[in-house]
Amino acid sequence: MGHRSQWCLKMKYAAVCAHVKDEQDIIGEWIAFHIASGFEHVYIIDNGSSDNTRKIIQSYEQDGRVTYLFQPTGTPADFSTLFIKNYGEKYRWMAFIDADEFLYPSAGGDVRAALSQYEDVAGVGIYWQIYGSSGHNTKPEGLTIDNFTKRARPDYYLHRHVKSIVNPAKVIQPLGSHIFKLDGIFVDEQHRLLHDGPPHGYYDEMSPSHSILRINHYHVRSREQYDRKRKRGYFGVDDSKLQASDERFEHMWQAHDMNDEYDDSAKYYRNLVNFYMRK
Image 1: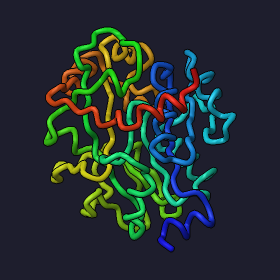
Image 2 (image 1 turned 90 degrees about the vertical axis):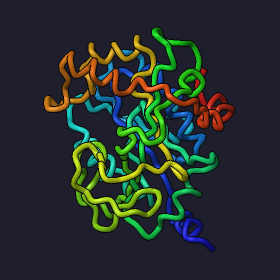
Image 3 (image 1 turned 60 degrees about the vertical axis):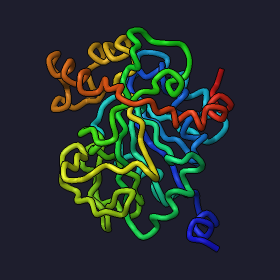
């Protein structure tokens, strides 16, 4: 019997966690996508939404795989601490991402199978793939994974950012929203050692790899959707150090609206996403 099978006899294997604010355009699809890709539970903190985000999330709670929490104040580190303290003992792995980030195995299939090869480490850093607007000025109808299929070239510098999947039992403390201080080894998907120091999980010295696991980062989507971030506060969290000026807002648009290559690999999960989505 393999490591994952032994673990599953005792508890669940993988959960995904996020904090969100005013994400009604994407949150239903995001939940359905991560259930489709193999996560056994989805934990979401609502950081004070004023749109239909709360209603959408709560519509998924009835099947027992989604937990909604309302927490109008706090930092990303606060939210990660809450998730780990309240639910960490139930899982071997917990992923910490945002509502515009879709995490899945690069070849498709179940994320738990991909994670089973990292049983010897405390955490895995998953590199971004930056997706642009695909030329959309206004919000298109339909799924994000259908509408936004163009991304930056593989060696784009922002792909050196990682988000973390960690063993909750090995977490000492969160270091912002990207990485954690761990009692154990932190590696990328190729088992290359990652240290826990860089701000925002940016590893300038690394060559990003996306052959096993990846995070599609739909940071901009359409220009209309991106402009809404200006109204709500750029990051949507209670942390003045993270809020952005108009100038930085425009710089971030230019840096993230990258449409160099066509890549629709997330459509592997399309049928399951449609199955799990609440209509």
